[in-house]
Image 1 (cartoon, rainbow, N blue to C red):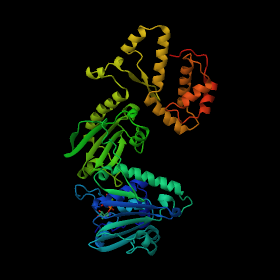
Image 2 (cartoon, rainbow, N blue to C red):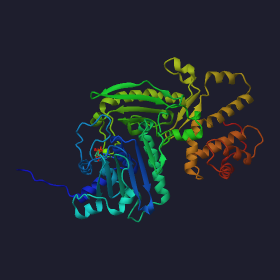
Image 3 (cartoon, rainbow, N blue to C red):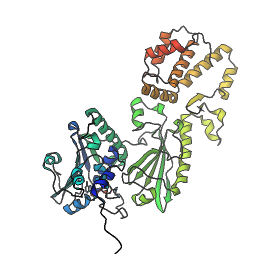
Image 4 (cartoon, rainbow, N blue to C red):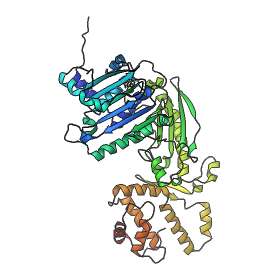
Length: 494
Ligand SMILES: Nc1ncnc2c1ncn2[C@@H]1O[C@H](COP(=O)(O)OP(=O)(O)OP(=O)(O)O)[C@@H](O)[C@H]1O
Ligand SMILES: [Mg+2]
């Protein structure tokens, strides 16, 4: 015999397992996956703060486990990732329950019911580390009993994680404040509403502290203005992958609330890209995987890609179910689809005229809007050489021409896309106005002064402060900029 049985030592392995890169959102989602695999109809999640001494409790009414099944479930590496799984199954590695829980806290208690029989187990990492052995408690500590309760119906499972050192600083000097704790919970809610939106749309109920989660559909299901592109089926290593492209409506067609909601967790620009689903559960979102930049003109494109869990190897799904790699065989197809729909988005964002759509190659001179890009920024400008505009300007006298040009400049500065960018910047920077916003204020003011109307600084500052996109800047700040920077005798800057 040339081998020697070498058990990993418990304490260091635990530390490694705790650090495989979950965040609180991916960790909770991984535990919810288990409830879904257990065919639950609801998942009730409770986050208790208790000055950092609280717990996270996740309850389902799924099929539950027998004692033998629970013992296996609590084992690190309880299943072989190479085993074939049920088509709909979200689990793969036999790790999630333990690794996700340990990434948040040091104690994991599970009580489960199957065929009317209760079983329970508990991992306490302080104990395991102290003994440096994988010693699993057969019963739940007395102080947890009331908190965990027991599954009410015929079957179900309750997972309770406490000693939340990583989640909220339990036992450390940096205990999360209550307010930050609950804003973390809100972010988890939004994440779950996104990654499980298909499940929620299909009737699964998830609640957090009594609030019911609503599905967040990235493709704005039900919005009559969105474009649903042609569905494509491709084969990757003999397994089918479905690609469905969507182009959202122009941002200006939304009211403020709907606009913000449609922007999802990362906001419009960052949410563009591929949305990858494995067995109807989103595993990756808003990412071009390095194929394209996330430019403003392409922000309307969201492309749904669906693969099945028998293709896990091809997509290199990780334990956390949150990162994947696009298989080489799929790259070319995805690139082609994305390139085409990015162009559609660019056309919508640029308000291209109908005439330009017909002649195959789009002639630049017929576009009403064009994208002006320097090394850092991009913004939309009106095409001042458009033949119709040329025609109009040719027939009018200098004064009217000057006024039309002034008006066009205002339209340009006020284009929804240019303003949306400014508004974000203004809010972020609060009263520390960044150079770009400042320049826009100055441009506006110079144009307003040059109209020849009787205007003073007060009036101009007020006009600018109520314009969309500048709400974040106080009048006094605008006035200071005007006093310092604007030349009141300007005539026309067009
Ligand atoms: N809520 C639950 N209800 C019933 N069975 C469960 C539940 N949670 C876990 N299990 C059982 O425990 C096993 C281990 O779960 P765990 O999350 O560690 O691994 P997995 O789901 O098999 O794979 P992955 O590591 O990919 O999540 C599951 O395969 C399942 O059999
Ligand atoms: Mg799992």
